[in-house]
Image (cartoon, rainbow, N blue to C red; front, top):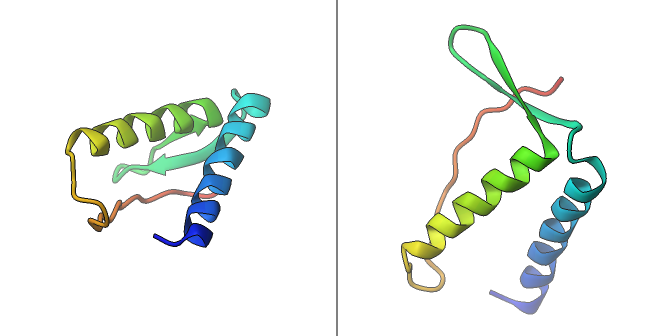
Length: 77
């Protein structure tokens, strides 16, 4: 990964942490379900989930450069 790509990734992470710090309890996004219901997520919950996913991926000890593809469906309010 290039230095430029690393700086973009760090900037996104820093932005998430900043939002979490300032707006922890504010609405961030909603997860839709097949029955039409929505589960709302706050900035704090989204950051916590991101940390949990990152920890899991690190635990897999994947080779550097391994490509992964997260899939998610969200609903903008």
